[in-house]
Image (cartoon, rainbow over all chains, first blue to last red; front, side, top):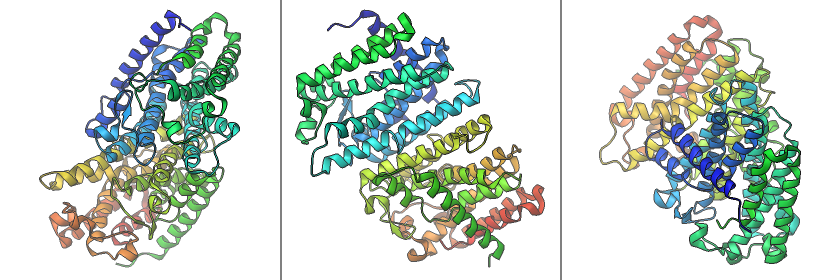
Length: 293
Length: 293
């Protein structure tokens, strides 16, 4: 499957704009922890930030506001990766093809940089520069906290850790629930945020995000089996080495790929109400399962 | 110096009310990370939460609202202690007389419980139940993020870590700056929050908090030298063992104690405009330097 050129152009522009926004917003901070924060938010696909930009654009939200929200979700994503990579968690040496924060600095700096990136995300959202309506800002903070906290992403991470030492491998239902929390909630939030910024009904975008999130995770599991470490930018084959149950270990490569493609079609169906304005979002769904990193 | 009985009664009531509030707010969460979160927010002096209650009471803020804000700052405090106690940071086994979170569970649970407690604090503040005015909620989120992030508490922690490996010991000016960030900002915020909840000018309370924060840290340094580990509830003598420059190592015990008492008087002077309504706040300042844990 080849990807539409417009998508790659839009994504490259988004990546550049989000990086500029993060650089500007992080520039007041100094010291080694701030350096590690800047390092950790560099690069990456910017899929979550791109989803904010594209969903907000459906409702003609000024791009400058959407970019601040995109920066916030990328900061939360980066914080989760820094802490996830720590020796006591996944113990990864490589992230986006570069040494992880605790390898480049040390564990203390990694803990603090992750902590401060989380705080930074809420600071950016609560700032009047994000939107003149304080109710909208409070709503962004509240929903991001719900998506990322002890009933959201952190819950998914805890389930993932518990699964590693469990006596019996997870069932497909349990994996789906785990991934919905661990990965899905932070892919759903950008779509919700676009609707919040646009004062619009979030329902179609949330339906899109639910299918997209699951497709994303199946693609991640496939990359761990079929991907190339250098291209992916992190270690591969880790799930099988750890004897971890994944969509791929249960369904097999072909059925997992077919399931991911079905999910892409459902995601695209959910945004039909927006017509051709949602063309890029439809392409993102395809990108999520065809990406090679 | 003996402490006024009314203070101890008010503090005990605050401790109990804050605990009840935290129990209620944390009850929806389940699993080992949620258990660790509840464990970490149990006990403690509740000084930061008590400051919210007492400053908010100056402006007749309903206690139920102030209690939610008190719970939020205690959650941030608990998160900072969990991460500070990690092996890669201070490597402490004991906190409030109990095993630290990573000793009772493991490091991964400690990282995640700290992460989720930070998120929880912002979730509580942004929730409409805290105040019907979204501008006030956004203001609480913004100021707490500023106080605890990369330009606040985390910056102080980073300076503290850097000091441990520095070639030359810190000067008194550098220690004052470090402690103002590391400890002072989270003692200042509750006073600011009381004024925000009360729609009042924060200036007198911020002046009070600045003196109080420094007095608190000098008292902490004194406890590390003169305190008893069992009473204090954590290891003592750690600063001297680490060859760390503190107020006490530079000034000596007697001069440090005198300096702390001067700061108490300045703190009490700052809240004279509130008259007898601030009697408990005046007593808190004394308590901060006479406490034995």
